[in-house]
Every structure is written in C-alpha cells, then in structure tokens.
Image (cartoon, rainbow, N blue to C red; front, side, top):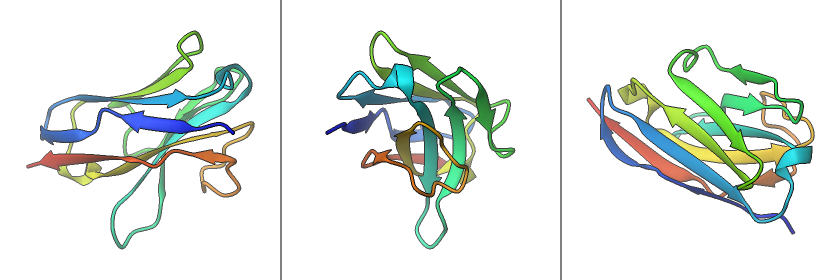
Length: 121
C-alpha cells in the first residue's frame, strides 16, 4: 500500500515562503502524476498544482507565478515551493498521486493526510 506523508506546513507571515514536502512510501513517482490540493473549512477542495508523470506542470491561476511543484524521483518526494504567500493561501494542503490527476480531485488513488499552512496578514 502506497502512503503519502506531507510535511513542512506551519505559520508564516504574508509575503513569506514555505516549502511543503510529500514523501511517498513506494517507488511510485516515476510512474505517477503528483499533485497538490488545498482545503479550508466550509470550502470545497481546490486544485493547486500538479506535475504529470511525463513532466508537464500546471497551476491554478491563484498560485501561478508564486508556487512551484518540484519532483525528486530519486528521493521519491515531491515538493511545493510557495513564495509571496498571502492570507488567502491559508489551508490544509494535501498531496495526491495517480496516473492521471484531474483538477477536480475526483477518483484519485492516493492521498496524504494533509499539512496545515497558516499565513498571517
């Protein structure tokens, strides 16, 4: 069973940076697309970024130019580098893995348990 474990969340001031990590328990990264989603209480899950198994990246409009998804297949880890953070980036961030990742987050095979990011204004 593949497990995804996120880390790196925390409290940061607006304008600051954080790097989230998602470590996979099995050698899946080479064959899977990896994604990041986020969710705040009372709101639907929101797509943030993803990198396909072919290396193609995509970002939501709200984070484009500020966030970068980086995959390290050797370490079996995917990162989300977050810069110029805003209060509205506050959320629980989830890592996801599947052969194909839809922006809706539907039918994704593996999810992490999430890591909380809080941006103070």
